[in-house]
Length: 377
Length: 195
Image 1 (tube, rainbow over the protein chains, first blue to last red):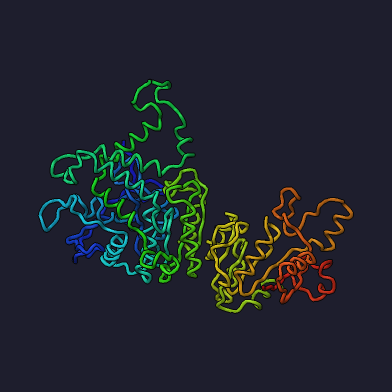
Image 2: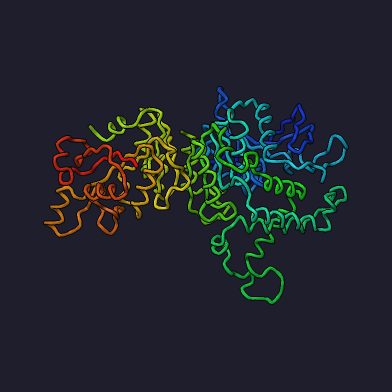
């Protein structure tokens, strides 16, 4: 007998994605306008009569709209932030109306490179414009209008999701009461960009990539995507986490003097890469890594974060994790220090966790209690 | 009179207040309610930080011993440092930072010169289990204990002006008679200082 996910305690249960169509085109930072935008999203909990208990969840690089609960009864794993979203969890769906859209340019149902370009009648493929975090947030603002949500109780996310939350504070100060900026940074470092470039080159140099026209040519640049994900995945974990999880364990208990996956860690990375290469779109990955690289809201203010933050009205909770080296605690502190200098309402916590950058996905007690209290006060 | 009413007296409404070692955020929370101040706490203890967030007090997880480089000169109307200085590795740095950042500064100092502690040491020959905690010397957070006299000497050395001082008994009440022999009679001192 299959489990009935609807009945699971502390889970939002079975969820169905919804879709919303934009009535107007969206003009992007690059100057192009996108027409017929559709955004796929999930919601958990109930919007109250005042329509003021809504929380917007922003997903990270490879995330999607399926943040909590189960899509079907046979699902083994719940949504990517199920540890934090649900009844009586950090983001409590008994009280809050939680909304998670798949971002523009994504490959899980929202308009993206796999969608049909209304101007040509063909898939966008490599012609999908390079979008930015600001474009995403502008897109989410229109999405909020369509949902009838004037102001978000909180916009929250980890990594690239945290960057969107920060951008919300800057772009729509009157439409956001709180922001959760988790495991994020105010801009990428050269090292961050370097890792993204390796990932992009892995994809672009795959012969199956076909200059981005792989769908038309019935090909998938699986090897490129796989490599990109493997490199990315290493940066999401910490040395400590990898040591704990794999150490130098051998799959077959002995060395085989060959190039097959001998160490557990090799096998794990290959598996992660394989799964990813079958579910993620290469053009989306290229766009989203570029979008990360471009994120630098202070560039308009000659790099001055304090001036950048002057317009903020929301209350912020900034969270970092001790073993995160992709966006280390020092990067969060840059944000916090500027918030203090700009005299903004902000709190900062540094959570001890062994999971590296991925820590933001795990419901560590201190972390979830802090988010819960932040949303409550 | 207790310490809260002193803070209420000394801190004008709508001030910006930085509380170094803010604990569970009690002081800031009450000042937010009573005086509509804009508060920010700095704290290192995870449980205390959580309590601050629960009270709606802005709090930054940070070790004061690392200094407060990110906070600019004279950027807060008030800097509070209450029952914290004795827990720091580097109280000198903290005092420099307090007076650099605050237009006005309020520091409360537990008095190791209190007669009870002197008697304890004299009679038992053992370190008194001091101040607010009942911890032994090896497990106490209070690693840099001083007397009020010591504190005032330090202020002089650092060119810090003591604008006003008040003295508290062991139940935290301000009592005028304590000023007859504060270093012997009072359990702690409240100092308004500036540089």
